[in-house]
Length: 103
Image 1 (cartoon, one colour):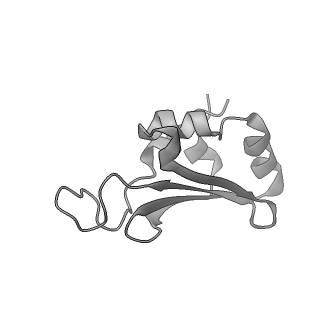
Image 2: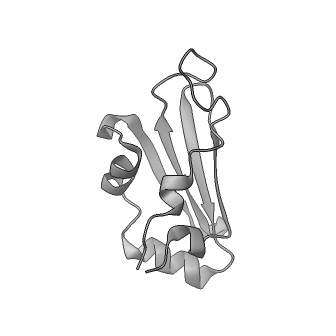
C-alpha cells in the first residue's frame, strides 16, 4: 500500500484565518496527481473520518489541475489561540491525511 504522503511532493497544513484549517497537497508531476485524484480517496467521507469532523465542519475540497494539487478546508473546533487550542498555527494537522492509503 502507498500512502498519500509518499505520493505528495508537499503536504502541509496551516490556518486559513482564526476559525479554519487548510490542508495543501501538491504533486511533482501530472501522472501522480491524476492518479490520486482519480482514486476517489479524497472525498468528504474520508476527510470527515480522518479528522473526526461532522459533514457541516468540512468547508471545501478543491482540486487545482493547473497547480497539480488540492486543498481541503475545515472549520476548527476552537479558534486559533483560544484556551484549549493545541496548534495555534494549524501547522501540525496534516498527519492524518499524510497516512491515508491511496492504493
